[in-house]
Image (cartoon, rainbow, N blue to C red; front, side, top):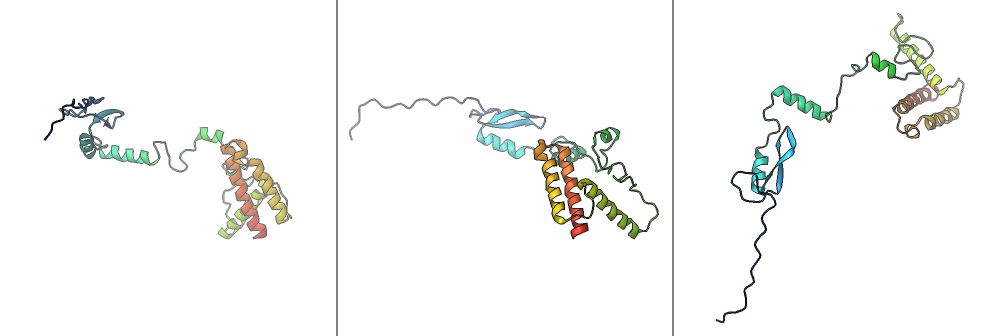
Length: 195
């Protein structure tokens, strides 16, 4: 057997890791981050693959929280940490001043000046009055007087939609609400006169 007398090629020494594993006594590189705690989600431990797996298996976000705190946290997460309220609870005196209500729906009075409240009529009479009121409100929205044709109604609808569409107003919420009223009025008039 012949021996090769050329210089052996020496492999360079491996470079030390940029950061060591934060697990006590581990000499491996800390390539994987893990949050320090629920309260410090932006501050990390750096672990090797074996220790990050062990850390993740033992991780409990809710550790140290009472059942009430956990329930509150879960409820906040369902709405992406944004405030919420029960239907109708948000309306207070300050809210009322910011609402644009050209038809008087929030005041309890319709555009024609009649009250929404009951006046002793029977249920059938109330339903008829409501239907008549809905028709009158829809006519007020479209600024139309009967008799009119379906073509005239559709033409007026197109004009109002073009005028009040939120895209034409930069996504304005007031325009969006106005468009909803226009759509409802159109459906009401179409059903009442041509349905």
